[in-house]
Every structure is written in C-alpha cells, then in structure tokens.
Length: 466
Image (cartoon, rainbow, N blue to C red):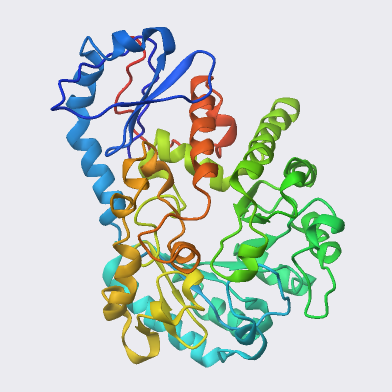
C-alpha cells in the first residue's frame, strides 16, 4: 500500500485546462488551504498567500503528473479490484433488545430463525471452501458474528468457533448483555474480536435508545464489562450517535478513556429504517459536538500519553494520507458491501451488507442452495457494488468524494429513494475531511491513528520544499 504525504508550503501547479482539475478548498486553517484532485484523491496543503504561485509555476503539476498513473491505478484497485475477505454472519434473527434505531425489522427480531449448531457449521464449511479458492494461500477470511444479537444463539456460535478456529479470524459484535464470565472467558482465551455497544457515559444518556423489549435500559450491566475487558487487545466499543446523545459525545470519550477503551467508534446512526430516521441528528447540529469529541481525544492524549482511537474518523484520515491502508469500507465508493464483504442471514440468505438484511430486494441468493458465487454477481448485489459517486448528483462534483463515498447505500435507497442518491450525513463527512486536513497541517494526525498504522506503507511523493 502507498502513503501519500504531500504537505507543501511552496507547491505549484500550472493548469492549461487540459490537465487535472486541482480544486482549492477552505479547510478552516489559519495558514493553509487544501488543494485536491478528486479523481485520484491526490491532495496538497498550500500556504494561503502562496496559492497563486502554486497554481502557476508548474512544479506541483509536474509532481502530480509523475505519479498520476500510479495514483489512478491504486484508486481503481481499491474501488473495483477487491474480492470479499470478510462475512457478517447472523447466526440468528432474534435479539433480546429492542433498540430504537435497529435496521432489522421487529418481527424478525422477535420471531426470526435460529441456526442450529449443525447448520451453522455447514455454512462455515461452505464459506471455507469459497475463500480457499479466492484468497491467497495462508490468508484467513474474517467472520464476524453479527446481529440481531448473536449470543442469543451462543451454542451455535461457540460450536462454529471451535470447529473452524484454525480457518477463520472470528469476531463477535454483541450488545453485551449476554457476555457473562464464562462467555467472556471462552472468547478471550481464543483471542476472538469483541465489539460491544454503549451509547453514552451514563444510564440517563445511554438507555434512551438501547432498551429491552419491556423498556428497561442496559447501561449498568454492559458498562461493567469495560473493567473485565481492560487490557484485552482485541475489543472495541461502538457508540451510535443520535439526536439524544450527540451533545454528550465529549463526555462519552472521557468515559471510554477513563476505562482504558483502546478503540471506539462514534457511528452516526444508519437511517435504513424509520426508527433510525426518527432519531437522526441534523448535520449542522451534530458537527460541532462531533468535532469537539475528536478534540477531546487529542486533549486526553496530550494529558496522559494514552490514545483513544475513534476508528471511523481514523479511517477518514487514512483515506487521505494512505488510501489503501484504510480498514473500513463504508467511506469509499462503491462501499465494501458485496465486494470487500457480504452478509449471511440466519436463513442463509445472502446480502451485500447487514444493513440490507431487512430489505428483500437486495437478497442475492442463498448460501445453502449453492448460490454464493452467483449472488456476488447478481443484480441485487450489483445495485450496491456498482453504486458510484460519479453517478450521484452533487457527489459527482464534490472535491472530497473519495474521502467520503456518500455512504450508506442502504440508507440512500430506503431514506432518499434510490441507490444514486446521497447518504444521510453529507455535511458531517465534509467537515471531518476538513478537520483531518487541519490535523495533517499541524502534524497531529498520528495522535488519532493506531500505533504502527504506517508499517506497510511507502512514501510516494513528498513535496514540502518545492
């Protein structure tokens, strides 16, 4: 993978009209302005009083032209050259919670299918055979037991992990309410990835959207897990951001940091279903709270020397400084659904992503009917894998389109009426990109990234001193 580091105080560009379109953008920095070439995600930071020179004397253009073909090939491979290497696997449709914003329909979560242990192991066997044909030798696919709530079907999940522990990298994304000591011990002894969900720093905030079917909050029992997970290297906490908790994001960061959470996600609510849309924050109201929370992570790092990485924002930074190093595939176009990963429902039905599990239009086939390869090429999947920002009005003209990707296709389809519509949080993504560029200008970006993120990167262009 390539790292592109092009911080420039005297960079230059001469544009005759036939060359690339380098677009200046105000990043809100006192000294620097951004200069982007959207198609390749090439960028530079130019001192504001030297922008005219940068756009006239040709040095920046020459630097860009020397690497433009490579940049374009990397972006093409990232967008269209990946093969699936992960599966979001729902071992059950059911859940013991009734969260306001869940993307799985209530009827499924109450009365849906449980996979038997035998059926789950059969499914993993099919997946093992498929990935054995598509991934390089020695590379293990990732299987994330997802939901609904996978631990309502713990017997099947554990049977699958035991039977295929040498064949996959396993993870469990759980609401945390069923992670008793025995379950935790089983997962931690096998170094299984664990993701839990906590939506705020206290019960008053966190329990507003995350409740049992009889309306009881679960903050107390889930938050107790943080002490039990302390020091475990393979876990993270997801906080779903809504109208109801956006004003407490900084306090949530404080809470996570105090509990030594290494990685969290502040995920804007996915608006696939009406319940989520009912609690969606407005972008202009969310942005200041969100950026303040990111500021807080830096303040805590400076104070303590210990990071708390907000993974979804870190992915935005990586999309800028090292596009192919990004781990999450929501903020690229097409997104990862159906091309970097896919989802398997408890019935074996195949979808591009878990967000589509409740949308029958996007069912591409069934795993148990031998339809995996066909599903990946089906019209249901291609609706997702062929969704490009170039075909979305507004996004096609946006300078930051390859740092955002106009996510999410499921919410674009269900909320905005079609796959060629924008996602739900345009302004928030735009402001995160501006914020990330300000961090890069101030050389603070590493404080927001996991240690060692650049171990396998290569510096491709450095034009600080043109």
